Length: 46
Image (cartoon, rainbow, N blue to C red; front, side):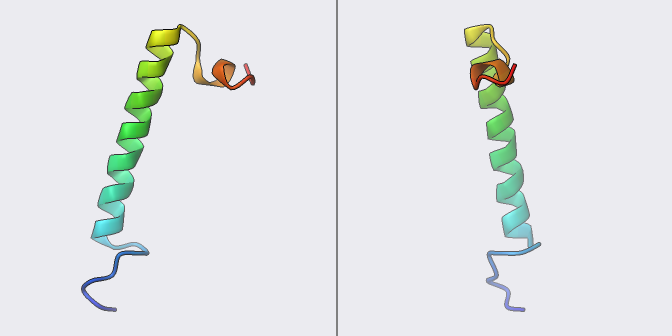
C-alpha cells in the first residue's frame, strides 16, 4: 500500500472521519438547543 493512500483504514481517513463526526455532533446539539426540539422530532420521527 502506498504512503499516499486516502481511503480505507489509514490515519488520514480516520482523522477526517473523527473531525466530521465531532462537527456533526456539535451542529446537531446546537440545532437542538436553538429549536428546543430533538433531532428525531425535527425530521418527523419523534
